[in-house]
Amino acid sequence: MSGPPSPPYHPFAYPGQGEVYHDDPPMNSPQPVTSPVFTTRDAKQPRLTFRSSVALLPSPGTNSKLHPTYEPISLKYWVVCLGCALLALFGIALEVARKLSADHDGFYVPEKNVFSFASAQFLTSFFPSFVFVPLALTVHCFDWAIRMWHPYLLLSQGRAPADETLLVDYASSSRPWITYYALRFKHRFVLISGFTALAALLFQPLAGSIFTVRQFPQSSSSSVQSTRAIGLSPTINDLFAFSAAAGYAEASVYNNLGAPPFVLGGWSVAEFVFSTNVFLTGTMAVNTTAIQTDPNCANPNQLSVTPTSADVSTLSATSLQGCSLQATFNPNAAAQQYGVVNVPNCGVNTTNPSFQPVFFWFWQKSTGNSAGVFCQPQIQLFDVTAFAFLNNDSLANVSVVDNYPKANNVSGPPLDRLPYNGLIFETSNDVNVQSRANTILSGIPTAIFRQAEQVPGGPNSVFQDPNGFLTYTRQIYTQHLSLATTSNYFVPANKTVAAEVTQFAPRLFVEHVDFPAHTLAVLCILSAGVTFVLHSLHWRKRRNVYLPHPPGSIGSAVALTSHSGFGELLMPYDNAAAMSRALAPLRFCLDRRTGAIVVDDSTIAQVNDESAQVARDETMMTLMGRD
Image 1 (cartoon, rainbow, N blue to C red):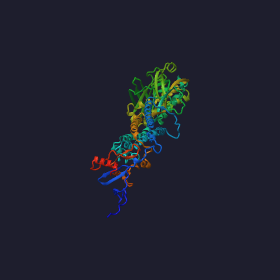
Image 2 (image 1 turned 135 degrees about the vertical axis):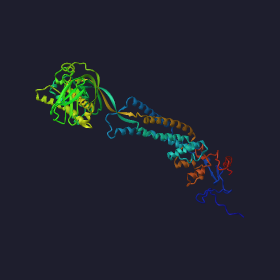
Image 3 (image 1 turned 180 degrees about the vertical axis):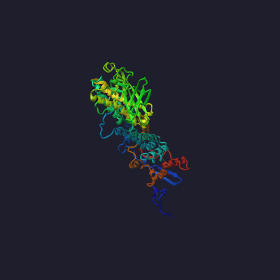
Image 4 (image 1 turned 90 degrees about the vertical axis):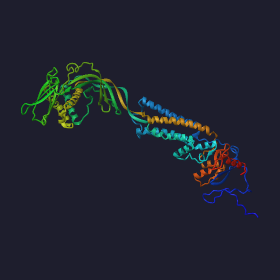
């Protein structure tokens, strides 16, 4: 009596979600004997069997034209060589540019920005970054090709686990996961290539900081027109220049004015014509002549105020040279009084008060304080180099070249280097000249006392300071005499003199700090060298890989595995962990004849407690069709 008929054979059945099992086919079922059968065993699942039909496939080129091995542009050896050469050249060029920038004080750039729509800072940061974008993309393309091809490289060597080849996704994973997998599986090609790609991420920020535009002095020879020469002005006794100088000294105290043109401290320089280039910023060095004025001021050796009567007080003073004088004033006329008098018979052999030393005196009624300063002006004539700012025509410095060699009416008769004191003059019958003389006589002492009133603590603090009035007297009196000198001891004279223009012009510098430029150059050169060596080794190893189509697409995956059979171990709803467990016992390789991904029949991994020899024997039996 026969039993119930056997159910039709189904290789796999799905009784419930999460269950996978396999029924052995009936003994009388037809068995294909032309394709190998593979069997796996696992303690957690029943025996699974699949068949590979790769052996039944015709060899490439039998039924159709043999397609060449696919090689992306980023893996072609000449492209890699070209890209590495460009990287190295950029690194070397950057080092050379850094050296030239340091040796030649930067590079020329137009004085006026020709790009009105963008600032110099934007241009020096955007364009270098833009230039390095293709280089960074090239390194990333090389890295992508290494990552994409690495599983096939391992498969070509055989005995490759699924986790390191079929299931690893170097193409679309994030950079941290790529680094993790490369470290875990010791994939050195991927790891080293990843480091070059990470280094390439620094190209753009470093490139944006390697250039800077700075104002740098540039010198060039030139000539200017000198309009004055040393000589005694024929109108000096009209006192126009002294009056104007006294007025400027007073205005300078009240309005905090700067130094007048062609005057710097005690120096008075012959006037010359400045450059009219409005874009120039810098200095001009002119070989010219100058007169140095020294007021030669000092505190008195002795000073006292003695009331002579109710309306008269006498101020007596003696200089360090022994010169003495007396000045009288009315103590009831004002609470604060000051003035200047000439000092006759004191070191100068002249009776003309215009050339005699002077004495400034100051008195305060509330405290009874008094002060005084002796001054005996002197002048010296020099050939000098005058340095002037081009933006405001003011003097920056005066450097002595030599003594003035020519004799004239200033260095010789009638002055014989004896200057006017600029404060006290002989009485004039011309009411206008005498009016100017009176204004000058009162103006300079007034300016000095006004300066004392402006300091913290007021005049009291200046009276208490032993050198208080000496400092302000020397400062204001020097300015008065120097400004008057430009008109009184210089006369009109046109002459061309040598000059040197030092212009502050924009220069393009490769950043002198080593970090940005030097680091970028080193990264470029190292990336080029590492990439070249890496791809050379990679090129040698992938010669055994026959892949006629680009990997990565669904069609490519189907074409490589559809005849291999092990896909029957996987379910559409498996996650990564399930696929890893299903394929863990197997090792894979590329079929050398067709290029398909197949189970490596030279080894079957040991699973659980089964020995490797038992697994190998069972595999050989299945390959012979005796399962």
